[in-house]
Length: 246
Length: 246
Image (tube, rainbow over all chains, first blue to last red; front, side, top):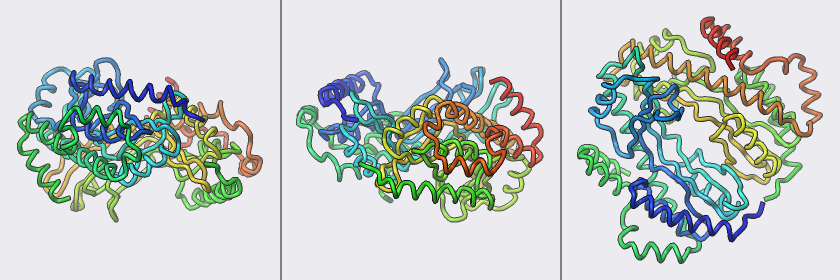
């Protein structure tokens, strides 16, 4: 399969400008930004919808079901125990699941050679579950970079709710696993910075230069700011301790 | 990248004979067999190490960590509450996690065209998380077919163990999600049977014919037998009810 250059570049430019729109309206997980910029700086790569790692509470038949209105809480920073207690005051329709997932980054490469290069960089960053999702003549070679970082537990249904103490323990684990995912995101950024960009996309570089300071922060630093804004000081201290250890 | 035909076929023949060795020594999840045979019957495909879906209890830092001796229970059939109670009598070294995962099938395709065909079949079967893992001149285009079916919860550590009742609820959910995965495996078998083999590998076909009766059972029927052998009659009834519903 040969990718249509003109169409591929059109997609890159369109998604690049949408990225800034998403940031402005608050649709973008801010700690993802350094990673997205890094990949887009490569002439042969662009990014698609991605996630920096999150906690989701759903009221659904299964943890992965996404029926209408099934998500009752979605956050890219840790959950406070009180937040879950509040959710438990409302009646559960199906079943309540608490899920934490690591980062997922979607990329398009201009050709298979670039795609396999990106997969190698991903493996070096510990993203063992990465692969090529599809090959599209117009959109390019679509890749998913992902980790095994995941937690997914049952919390309660209409007849049975876990003990408050047990829920506390599970929320603690979900937060810890979220944090592990954020460290993995930071690792992807640091490792990929050594291998990318191979040849610079000047248009992207100019855009980035105009938005000063954007490349001064690492994903984990932005995450620490996000958590601090939510009043999760303890958590931030822990992050700083853990990142020192690395 | 062009795959070396001779080397690719050598890998196919070697892995095909290893599959039967694994079956004899009990290394192979029996309910996976119909799926493995189906894919290998195609001249342009062979299977690599795969899993029909399982429950794993690990004593590890994180649910996905695989340090030495971290797996304390691994089974391809449902868990009885008593089994977990027995594990909880021993001291926990790190942390105890209860994980259920859906099927994962690894395939090699002779070329990219076949790989994208397999990915389409996988998507039609609901295997949304499937992709090309790597391209290897000798081994072929390596693909992973996988679902989002997953459950992964904390059970206890050296200082805190969840309430017995809560553990019971979580084991129930793990079993249910295991079962969902088995239904997905069956679905892959049924959908893929319509699209494969495109051209038959005669050598594989001859082998299969000599082992009579192998293609008479669906994955879900074999799973029901496996569960019945373990004395999980209730579960089997439920399977039969659920499969009727489909």
